[in-house]
Length: 530
Image (cartoon, rainbow, N blue to C red):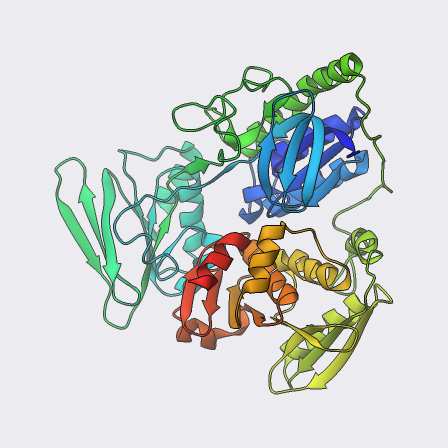
């Protein structure tokens, strides 16, 4: 019989983490499922100054503390993609690519994703001049003129961030004024490198191999104007025009508003008993970390009463809450790459290794090679199943190999830090064990793939890159005809020019097919098969 949790939280952003803290502190067993990055989209924000009680923090550090709090109370965390939700009945089922899980109650904290506007040229030039994440892609536009589409908080924040790269930032705002707090709007107005144009929208963007022009229209007098980049130069468009609610998993099961946001009552309860919503997925006036955390706390405390009632009425036995050894700090210093906290978290994962994994590290004579070698030496010391071999080469990279030092054709041309550290850990787990459970149909599709060479170009600050890296590396692990190489674009500028990369993640198939943007494993398989 499958074990039943008291609650499953779908989404690991501030709302989900808050719900996990409150539920586990009340002695309920909780599983938090997140497909990308625990902490959510706020992790790409470099400065949070409006969270009460915290003078200043990065989104990453703020949510890291939240996750540790939930862990200390006993919450379990799992990286997985949810495929299906079965929300009817006394016991709910969550079907993922890592197996099925059951719970008495569900908290949906799935958030929302950046909205695409749909103007002509937007899709064609994504990754070739049109971008959606300043933190991920800003560095590609060093010395360029940039346009930021949007007038809300995110647009203003990102416009200010982009001034460190751009010669000038022009904000294109559809309404008559900014739609954010006056403090940040005033900061934008006062910035010497930012100009705002109101009552204006994008009509069209175009060019040849990369973005060369954009046409705008004034909504008041219907006049148009055009910007053309000088020959041999580049420019960029960053779109920050709101978000689309991530409701695909439950839009046919729960009541939504006209915009697709989840409808909840004052207790964050949805239209189904035992199912609660929290955070940006919900209909609300203000989408900020502080309101997400509030939603999570309200949903959790309301769900507590429901769980107890249903368990008593239906004699349901759920798994007991198991508190782990308390983590004292997320900022513990280390002389190496890995803090003691990270090592403690890695131990139960590495203890599951049943096969020897060899890191054959090829090094050239440069500082990057030394950094790469030192990282692998430290990581290899964490388990007797991990081994390190160094070989001289004209390029520096890690080749992940089996116990006979036979390559899995999975190469890391980067030091696995930032958001790609988890990808590297998953590669180790999937080569050193029987691997994470995959749907049989997907596994068969992987096995049926013919020979292909896949290059993945990432930035270590990109939250959208890990899903692509983890998918393509799994293809190489399961099919010996697939060769996957992962590159930190910051250390491999030659590819930036060769493939005209202006956004990450970027996937190059067989040295000629270039694909931009976040993709699931199924989407990548379909693209490769075409």
